[in-house]
Structures are given as C-alpha cells and as structure tokens.
Length: 203
Image (cartoon, rainbow, N blue to C red):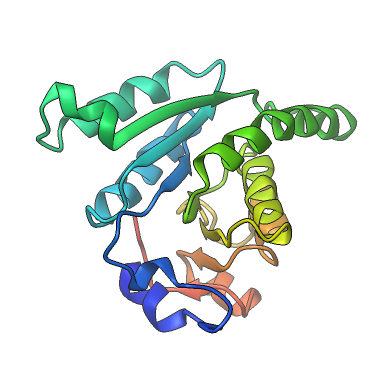
C-alpha cells in the first residue's frame, strides 16, 4: 500500500505529501465491529512506525473493537506505559445501523458528523484510513472540511472490504469520488471503477 501511494501521489505543489515525510504522521482509522476491524488492523500493521500516533475511531456502542485494538497495540512489543503515547481510541455515535431506514440514517449521520468535526479539528490528521463502515462518512467529511477551510490537507485512503467482489459498499459508493486513494481487492471492481487502485488482495 505504501509503495502504491507513493507512485500515485499527485499535485505536490499544493500540499506536502505525508508519504514523503520522515516526521511522525497522525493517522486516524475507523474500526467497526466484526470482520472490518480485523481488516483495518491488518492494514495498520502494514504501515511503518512513521504513522504515529494512531487514532482509532469506533462507535460508542462497540466494545469488541476496543478489545481487539488494545490487544493489537499491545502485541507490537511496547511497554504498557508507552501505549497511550502511540495510540488512542475515540468514540463517536454510530452513523448507521444495519437495516436502518434512509431517512433516519441521514439524521444519525449528521449527528455523528457533529462529534467528528471537533475530533478531526483537534487531531488535525495527515491521513484517514478506512475500509467500509458508515462511520467513515462523517469522519471523512470532517477531514475534507479541514482542507476546504485551508486548515490542513488530509489524505483520505479508502480500502474496500475483501468481501466486496462485484459491487461497492454504500460507503464505497459515497467515497469513490472523494477519497485521494481508493483501493479495491478484486479486478472486477477495478474494471468497473477505473479510478480505483487494484493491487490484489491487501488483507
């Protein structure tokens, strides 16, 4: 992934590409419950130590992902006293529940955005990494607003879930035109969405 981001980087005049930097880079990622959390942690494990601190954003009702994150970070061989320096966990309202109606989803997404805005403005991340949950949308929206207001350019990296073979998820369809780097893990999706980056299986 890191190599692909380097060769796909464009427009160096208007912003400093964090992937060219040797300074610490702030990287929030969205961790939903279930298989998506496993996928995002595998992606985080592939990133170099430059991407520190790491900020994990999870739904306020999600306990399983928090346990997985703490276990993952502890397995990286750091002393317990150092863990809080290298990563943090932030909770926001869930953007959309399974089978939730479209009308109520719009309201809950706006509510999640209300919490994501101050979080993103406080963290001022260099990159947001996400892979499918609805909570990605308000977080990425807040990151885009940071750039629109001229505060900071935030790179949005979206990796579609491995289970998406022929169609994009709803989050993927929303972020396809907005993400700086949009990865798919099946060639069929690359052919269907020409702006997507296909490197084979990533997780």
